[in-house]
Image (tube, each protein chain N blue to C red):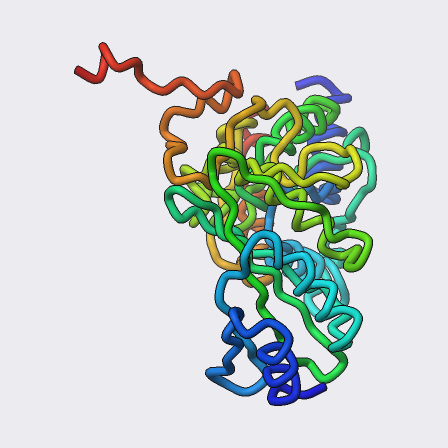
Length: 164
Length: 149
């Protein structure tokens, strides 16, 4: 399925996605509603033949964390499906059953952004090193690397009294 | 300098054996290290052989900015090498941390973990630079031997 056919099919099934293509072989969509997002991934997999999970890009957007799932088909079209989860309770379901290659990227989201991914098998830290303190997510904007002690592997922000 | 020390110094100078360790490099410098060892540049013609075990190596050739995950491994490998031993930092990341310096997951250069004898800057280093550094390192060994006498 080529770029135009994918856009037509996506916009017919999920009009809110507003799929567009600014350049050949690239399709971008608006942020999907949380309850719709999983359906869009399943639809892309089963109906549009996007069988390859290429990447997940995470972005800290302040109150939310943006997740962009990049899929591809045999015609080398890249389809970007996006969703937002609240930073206070970031939770998504693992897409590893449909796209096994995305599981590594889901682990990155867990380690670097603190996204809870249900259905993801237990495993070691990735890509953070062994012994990394729990609850510290280095790609969140409020996390300051200057306060991280690499020798003791502890995060020590200054107390409010010290800052004054 | 005793007879055994002289023999070791002679052997190191004539045929320093190296072990290559990637401490979180992007693989660019690693490819250049392999390039320097293999037939096109052929460092082996100078008696420089790559070894799989640190216990057999005289020179630790390191690439990468040293991630927190590799930090302890690098120290362990260095500790396993018998003395006298030398460390060569290959690439800008290995010398200073490069663009990864101050990143949350790197220590910022080989010399933050083990003492370094030779620095080879470059991103990625050219094999000619590696050969030049090896030549200078061998000259240093010559000088050390001369001082020993």
